[in-house]
Image (tube, rainbow, N blue to C red):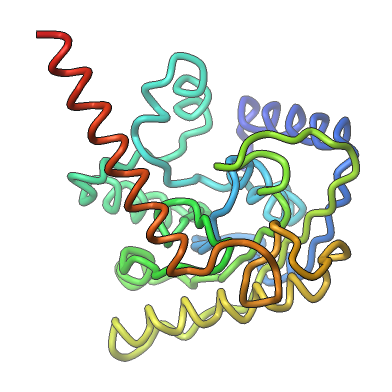
Length: 253
C-alpha cells in the first residue's frame, strides 16, 4: 500500500538493524495474505517489537502494519508525530472501545493490524494471559488472526535496559490462521496456546540458548523469571509507580 512516510520510516529502521548487524531469521511470512484485512497477534517482550513486527508483512508486497499502542506513546513529543504519521492506532486502556472501532475500520478497509494481546511486555519472556479484544475484532471485521512470535529483541532493548552489542540473533515466526470459531473464551485460549507453541518453535531455532541464560524463558531451561515470579515483579513495580505518582501529586499542591 502506498504510504511514503511510513515506507521511509521502514527504510530507516532497516538501516538501523543493519547497522546493529542483527541476524534476523524469518519463518512463515507466506502466511500473510497479499491483500485484505488480517490481524497479527504478536507476543511482546521488547520496545523494538513495533519495528521488528512489521518486517514480515513488508516482505509480502511491501505491506504495512497499523499497530495498536497505548495512547501515551502518541503524546510523546518525538514518538507521537511518528506514530500518528504512520497511522497507528492509539489505545486508551480506560476507554478501549474507540480503539477497537478504529482497528475494525482499518481491517475492513483491507489493512493489517498488529496487536499485542498480552497488553504489556512479558517480564518472563513467556506468553502471559491474553486479552479478549483480538478475537472480538477479528469476528466483527470478519478477518483472519495470525499468531506471531518475535524472539530476541528483548536482548537489545527491554525492561532490563539497552544493549547495542552487534550481531544479536532475532527469530520471527508467523503462524497459520487461527481457528476463532465457537465459544469466544475457547478461541482466546487457542490463541494463547498457538503463541506458546510458536514460541517453542522459535526458541528451538534460536542459536544462542545456553542453559540458565537470562534471555531464555524458565519453561525452556532459561534464567528468566517464571510467569508467577514475573507477575509478582509487575505487581511491585505498579505499586511503586502508583506511590511515586501520588507523591508527585502531593508535592505539586
